[in-house]
Length: 260
Image 1 (cartoon, one colour):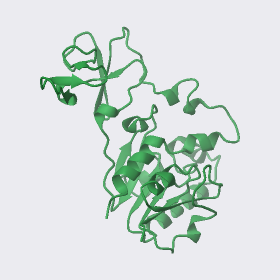
Image 2 (cartoon, rainbow, N blue to C red; image 1 turned 60 degrees about the vertical axis):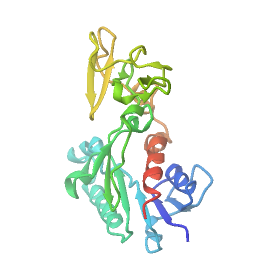
Image 3 (cartoon, rainbow, N blue to C red; image 1 turned 180 degrees about the vertical axis):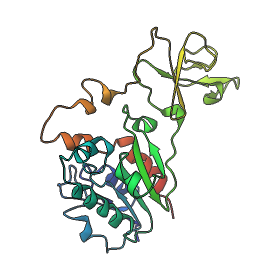
Image 4 (tube, rainbow, N blue to C red; image 1 turned 90 degrees about the horizontal axis):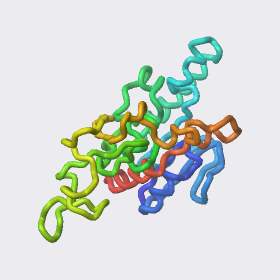
């Protein structure tokens, strides 16, 4: 019997399709139709919670939960009941009885009203050129792991490479850089002891630049004028901004699909 996963509040199909590709009976569910062909329940996730599921990954709507929008409530411009209803929905998902659960949301009311997240992740940690601090609340699932050598640096910066980050040269055994196809001592990678560079540390990952002056801000593609964070008003703006980044979807499936 195939393991079953419910991807709640997902219309993009990205997480669903990654698990399906690894042999799971994967279903997404949302009030929106699915963007891609796949097993999708068009309706209320509450209709499905009593079925047998081995895992649920849920993306509850963040409109009334995220810190960036709470000022509308605190200024009296939005009914506080909407946040209370959103929190009740999160409680419902967490207490659904499904043995393994992951809840994804930005920093906000879940952190302060329910519990602190299990971890915070960034898309650039998983290969996407974007910065978007995201919280995960995990039940019987391990923390997502990322490879610092595969992180995407911000504009004008590079990853800081140490000799131990490199492969071993098949010919001589010395550190070898596959990106530049040269030994570490000869490749143009920025090293940790290099002079005349500016090093910034973000979530434990070291980025560096030789530019002078150094860029004032660390910017990824979604933060540039044409990026996802700068999309103009439109009926579909919320959909584009809420999609799970492909690298995170792959990491979830890679690391959680084999859990027994």
